[in-house]
Image 1 (cartoon, helix red, strand yellow):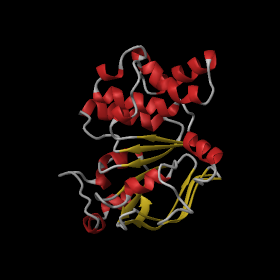
Image 2: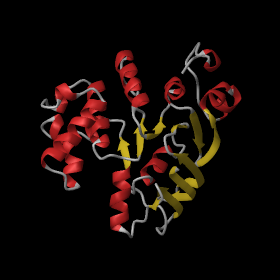
Image 3: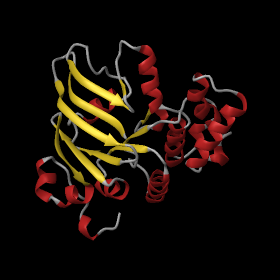
Image 4: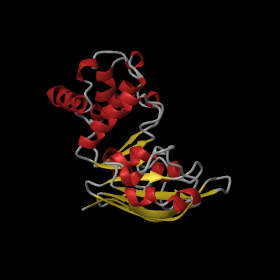
Amino acid sequence: MTSLDITDLHYSYPDGHQALHGVNLSVSEGERVALLGPNGAGKTTLVLHLNGILPAPNMPGAQGSVTVGGLKADPRDRAALAEIRRRVGLVFQDPDDQLFLPTVREDVAFGPANLGLKGAELDARVDDALAWVGMTEVKDRAPHHLSLGQRRRVAVATVLAMDPQLLVLDEPSSNLDPQARRELAEILLNLPVTMLMVTHDLPYALQLCERSVILDEGRIAADGPTREILSDTALLAKHRLELPFGFTPLATTP
């Protein structure tokens, strides 16, 4: 089954800047895909279409379609858009953009409570989400008292509590120390969910995603196995992507 279908997606901002030029992308259920590209490539614009933050079709400067699990994102259909937003879990780079309530428990409960869950069912959803990310023991703590790595894991839990079909992560390894980076990778590898990960961290892409897509100047420039993509030095250089010094994809076990 296909979790995500993007077809001929164009988008221009009100100032006239065209950020996407006919993007086509399909992600199968259970796949983990890294979305790579330089700054200004259109990655954020693309991601914001996936749960309706930016409109897909039928708006000025936009054309094409975004379909999640067979349901098309249409800004005119509020019920469909609400379901799309449940199906697509977006984890922002800064966890403080998602954590705003007095306790971790309340933050993780916020989304499913707004879907109408309550009582034992809500408690179970919160407990399950926190267990997935190894944060059960902090559920009664204030999020701002946690480390960055812990807050990022809690941010993932707030999304998992919505039972998404597609998990979208924006630079999940950004600013994490080596231990927190490793712990998060172990969690993400074990999640039973389709994943699209936006990252500049190419070794992280190799570790977590069997497939990578390069987006540059609003167009898909490459799509293939991550190890092959990262082994093509000319391709990486053309799209302003660089591996860390001494890192060799062909000699690395993901």
